[in-house]
Structures are given as C-alpha cells and as structure tokens.
Image 1 (cartoon, helix red, strand yellow):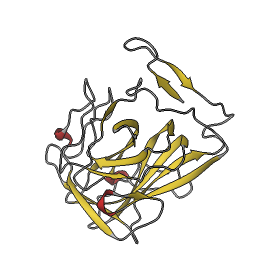
Image 2 (tube, rainbow, N blue to C red):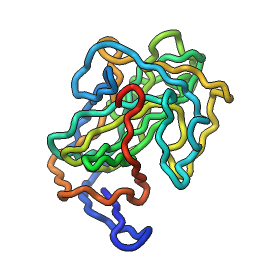
Image 3 (cartoon, one colour):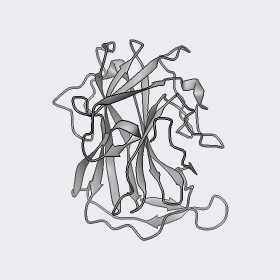
Length: 254
C-alpha cells in the first residue's frame, strides 16, 4: 500500500500492506465525491455553477523534475473536502465525471487526486488524463470506476457542458482521519515524473469551463475498501513515487 523513507536519503521500505485475492478488493464500494462552488468537494450535490481556467500546458514543467510545482493562478482549478472523520483506504481504479466546456472544439484535461494532510503538506496520490473529443462511451463497457471509452469516432465538443469521463490511474492509498481529499483539474503535465504529452492545443491555450451541481454533477468516484485499518500516524512525506509540497489553495478556493 505505502512506501516510506526509512533510513538515509532515498531509502525505502514497505510501511504496511494488506492482501486481497482480487483487485480491486471484494469489499470495495464506489464512493462519489461531488465538485461544488468555492472549491468544495462533498458527498452530496450542491448548487449549480461553473468555474473557468486557461488550459495552458506550458504553464508548468512537463514533468515533476526536481520540484513538484503547483498549478499557476488561472491555469487550473481545485476542490477540497472537509477533514475526514475516519481513515479511508482506497484500492483500485478511480473515475472522474466532468461536465466540461471549452472555447475550442477539443481540449485535453488532467485530473489529479491528492491528500491534504493535517501538517499542511499535500501528497500526490494519482492522476488521469482525457481528450475531450475521445469522450465517447460504450454503455456495455462502462462501469462506475472504469469509464468504457471506445476511442473511435472522435467528436468535437459541443457548446456548453459535455460529459467527459476520465480514468484516473489505479492506486492503493490510505487517507488518514483529519486529512482532506483534493481534486485538481487543469492542463496535462507537471504531475508525473517521466511522462510528457503531445497536446491538442498546438500552443494556443483554450479557456475551459467545468460545470457542477444539479443537472451537471461533476464528481470523482473512489474505490473505498471496508475492513482495512491503516497504522496510526502520517507516513513520510515525500515517499517513493509520491512527491509532497506545501498545500496552497487554487484561486477558486479548493
């Protein structure tokens, strides 16, 4: 589940683990969290609204490099929950359902899931990426945690809100009580150590818009595992493959 620095620079070791005959584990519940006004992330759908950003992949380094940089003001949005009352262990694939609009006929979007800890640090958990024109879904393949994209017959974005399902990469992570879930939405890049992307914008950044609330319930659905207890205490920050930074809210509040 987690890896932590245990002695010396760069050393790592298994902090704790649990076993399951399948992945995701059998006792997994698809648990949605809804995006809302003021950068809120909650278990219930809130009031209708929207938020915009300039979808410019050049605003950040293409990869993490030596520093995991925050998304500059105006080039992404964030949504953060209230502190968790209890630990939440997630294991498996994650799906984000975004009601997305754009000033362009096509756009690339990145979803980044992080843990905002009580010590003020933000730890990377997982990321997902999706091109708007490739949003077509096969209902026979579509699952709550695994979007059934066909990746055939690309279709330009229509004016207004388009449902774009984003597959966030599978992960195993324990969110501790007192921590907050955070979802950032913005241009692709800057949140992986080695991956870089050839984006559809061709150097001309569109203005993207995310709709939320009644009628357009943008959300992220997590695979929450019951019956698994994480050891007490926050793990080392950063860990192998999980960079950390001081949490700074996005301009929209989350």
